[in-house]
Each structure stands twice: as C-alpha cells, then as structure tokens.
Amino acid sequence: MAIIKSLGYIVGIIIVFIFGISGTYVLGHYEHGFNVPINSLLDAAYFTTITLATVGYGDIVPVTNIAKIFVMVLIISGIGVFITSVTVITGEFVNSRMEKYSGRLSGFERRLLKNHVVLIGVDSVNLRLAERLKNKKAKFLIITSDKTMLDHLRSTGYKAYLADETNEDDMKNFELGKAKAIIMDMRDKSRMVYAILLVRNLAKDSRIVTVAHTKEEERNTRSMGVSIGIINPADLASEILAKKLIE
Image 1 (cartoon, rainbow, N blue to C red):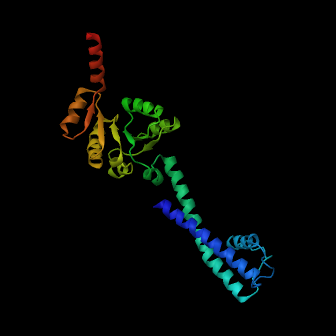
Image 2 (cartoon, rainbow, N blue to C red):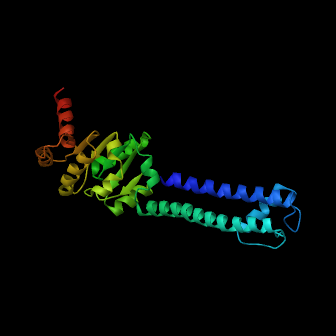
Image 3 (cartoon, rainbow, N blue to C red):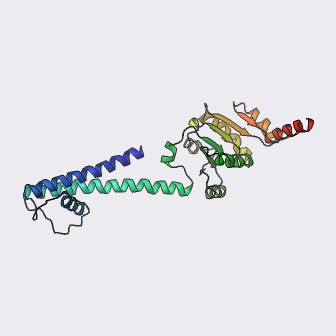
C-alpha cells in the first residue's frame, strides 16, 4: 500500500510538470502571454521548475490575464502536490531507514516475505543452521529479542530482526503463515513455551520444528499437545554414533 501511495504521488508530480510545461509553452509561444517568447519546451520546463521551486528569477513573467491565471493555478496546485509528495516519499524512506537501524522489519520487507525459512531464537542449533542456509544462499531470516546478538548477526551479514517472540503483534509482521518452515531454538526455554503456542496459532499450515536440547525439554514440549516436529540434537548425535560403533 505504501509503495502504491508513493507511486501515486510521483505520478502527481509528473502530471503537474506536464501541465506546467505544456501550458507555459502554448501561452508563451502562441498567445504571447509572457514578457519574452517561449520558443522551446526547455524554456517552458525552466519556467515551470523555477515557479514550482518558488525561485522566481523574474526573467520570465506573465503579462496577460490568462497567463497570470495559469501561473496562479500552477503555483497553488503544483506546490501543494509537490510539497505533499516530497514529504510522503522522503517520510517513507526515513521510516524505512529507522526501521532498519532499530532492527525492525520494514513494511517493504514484509511484503516480500513468502516461502521463506524463519529461525526463531539464537541458540546453538539455529546459529549453525543459519550459517549453512547462508552458504546455500537460501531465503531465510532470524528473529531474536537479544539486541546484542542482533547487532552481531547483522554485522556478519544475516537478515536478523528484533522482536519479542512471545508478542503476537511482533510475530505477525513476519508472515509466519507464508513461511516454508519455522525452526524454534530459543535460549530462554520458559519463553519458548509461550512462543511455541503463539507460533502454532499464527502458522497453522507451516512446517514448525522445535529444538529440544535435553530430554526434559523434549517431554515439556510434547506435553503441550501441539502438532509440531521436535528435534533433540543430543539424541540424534548419540544414535548416529552408537550405530557407527556397533557397525
């Protein structure tokens, strides 16, 4: 929506310039409405620009009533559109830069989210997984509530964002329902319990996997009764190692 609005204002600026240039050329070339002849579109564009910019050098001035009325209409409508457009467009840019600096997801970035992998939390498994996904140039992002970790991840080239994993409004921004997969591996295990329930509600059709580093964490997750995948890295590693040793 913001992009469409910005494009609309840009189109508005273009229309104002076309109106100004064409009107100036017709009145100055055929109607002799200015103190000097307007014999080219460049002259018309020059007059339109200095008029809208309120510079007014005085080298070209309207001398007929219709030319004066035209210039007044150009100034009133043109400056209004121009100032509003510049304010909105620069405002969008500044907001985008502020969101990026603060670690928040910008509206533009949100609109691009689809079929992406979301890593929620920055415990050991997700950090290692992020490294592998980055090497494979996969489309993914990392969500963390740890500002220090956020700064570190961003400095190393990751698409990481600051959010409260247990806050519904924060998590809605990441289009979890459109995600290809969601991997949850948070360091604060008590907060992870709430985050799991929230994510499951927001992304009912997405593949969700939680990482349990201990048997107790695995049992706690299973006891919640939510339909998600659970991975216990220690169990997987020991199972693979035992198989290799027996062989």
